[in-house]
Image (tube, rainbow, N blue to C red; front, side, top):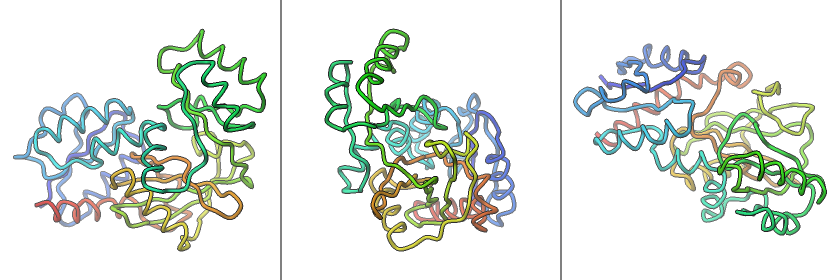
Length: 280
């Protein structure tokens, strides 16, 4: 039997679905382990660790600690670190030759304003670390940029003084998310919303998106650029070209199983067994 520890903070619907799929798999013996109990996980009692902590910082640190104990961790700490920081993700994608919106980084208000002029308005200002579409701002002109940056400089902590600026890519009411495991695309969805932020946490609806060759190839390249594993890759479309917007290392999928017809928790279980088999 493959001993799998599912490390969690909050137990959401995704974790319940994963635990059920792992329990039903004929060769997996799973157990839930809270973040605060991670010290009990050792190579003697665990073959593979599935990290499902909501907090990026918790997930990255726990993965690193467990790897140092000699454990096989999904996703690896390096992948979590890359995907959890939008600047690092963008640089990894750039180095991997993966198409994405134009971006700039800045570390002061004056530099941010110069970089914004380079990107051009409108643009998107994102916090380097964040999820669920929070604290994103569409900046339409220089006046809005100056006001927004002043607020971040005065009211925000140090994490708000690193600026990630991304080209705004208009979408026809939806974007795309591709689920991928070990370099194999599993399914894709379209996220439809009236708002320019297409995120299910903000009320976007979900529909199936067929995986064409271009979408498959983009997802495979993006996965390779950040180190592989279990990923959800957010994709934009610009003039018929697919662009990677973000890469998520602890994918949320509860709203994507029914529309795609793909049992994503089961596919995660199958991936873990295959992954352990490669390393045992």
